[in-house]
Image (tube, rainbow, N blue to C red; front, side, top):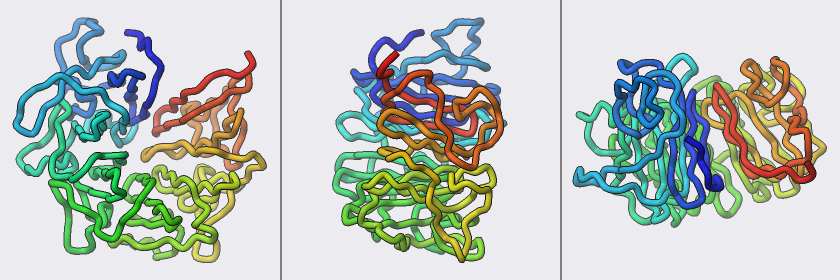
Length: 373
């Protein structure tokens, strides 16, 4: 099917993509390896015997399918509400099944679907292995503003600036310290208040406070929290020391790297850099001596785009986009493969005004418009 309306939000996951059109209708598209391994992350019901019926979820490739219904806390199936934000599942290219995804409705309610092996669906029930339709999450006071999905954990940001999490806490992903392995229901990260932005990598999270303070929790195997811990995780939420943090306007993360956008358009990064994803011109991870580096750009950047499984990153300027990192599947939008350690301009053939970019380990999605074609 063709999505006719303007796209207001989208998210690239491992071998799948979600879209929300202007009116709030959500769609899911992507590849399902097998009925046996699928755990419901697309949220459109169970796999059927399709026989090339594009209106049903099938093994193999799936064109966009409309998310028509949701399940409320009492178990009743209802018509899907209009949505405003979507967060696709986190997995690896070889696994198109064991993931989970999140939708936020225009009324601030949170809906979630997919794998639940560590309680990452926030449904409060260990007996639920997975669900294949979006279920409403209860237990979070107030309206949700944003969310973030990692590998086996979920974070939800409310309009009041609080952060709630569920799922695995084995390395502190949901900020609950050393004595909590997981939570199957939403728990508040008490140290965080007045949060205005958050982003997750595979097993860690970064938060931006309204006053300009930056916080982190979870894995620090590659120094992705901009500090040296000899590879040990940070199981409690802690403040990250970044010079000029009060000028940071956006935080972004991908698989094991972090990025910080400053008000003057400068970008700094830290963490894993084996594919050049830090964009500083080399392929060395950050270290105790150099915990954070400057991205090698002369362009003024207004937004950063990536995703929790991605090892690629996109720097959006006023009329251009620059990219660095992994490019084994042409995910940097270039006509040849090979990683890039220094950001290179993405060839759109014309000047463009790009609003957002979302990337995964398998592909990249962007929205915007041409300026002079």
